[in-house]
Image (cartoon, rainbow, N blue to C red; front, top):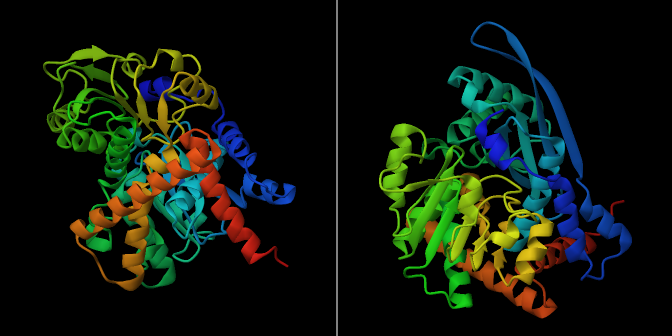
Length: 423
């Protein structure tokens, strides 16, 4: 088992977490029992077991999933995860969170998620390509630019999306760039996509700090997870004038109360493979990092990082969820009682799916925008979503997560009632 697995393995079932969050918010809405039940469960689930030829000539069987939670608002959208701990329940939870995330941002999508149980760090590029193309073929019965549009997630990247797009296109006999998002620019990817999730985190962290009266200049920021989301959020917070004092990745963390330059840490990580041993910083574990004295904490690793056990020790005033499901419902209750504001994942990390939506729209019309246009549109949507969620939370006198969920569930249930029940 990898160190990353040990550090971030969820303490509780993510599907149970997702259902608990859903029912907690649904209690505030006048939903008919059947509608509530319909929104709680995935529309369809696909499990595939498929062979992959390895470099040594052997054949290994891998298990993959694709779950569609809802198709009420439009085609399904959601990432594909390659990780040794992928389970069907995790994929179900992530698909449900995607439904709410798209609805909070006002995107015309339902939620989906996919995953393959594998360790991409132990596979060659050739093996990863073989696995990806076979998995893409297996799930192509669900996938399509009008039906289900995958994207990158933990353990996948633009190259994986390129292989999926090519595989799907080969089966169709012509190029279909809009079948996935998060692709390289050269084959229809969007400007600004790489930074989008981290940029969205920075935007809502800035608005959240403003709302709480925390001056962003010199605000102390701690970032757990230094991948695509955490590293970008860290250097953009640094650019905005905040002081990033600690960051971590799966191998451990670094801490300097006087501040760290995240771009220098990124250079160090590119050269050494980890943030650990960055000069001029103390070593901390991922667990210790979450409990450091700071103003803003951005958990950007995997689910279940903040639990009932460590929530009482967290010193941040504002938590901005860069990862999906980093805070358990038990931890949520403790943080709420302690007056800690949590900007939930379905709002905080929605920058990625928003720019994925922009990419899809650009691919469908074969007309592309500049990075400046993308960032302006993202900024407008993120700020708008933040204040809509804040308004809903204040109206119902609930925390921001419940406010975001109420807003999302209302949108989906209103659309469902307007469409009617077929037949």
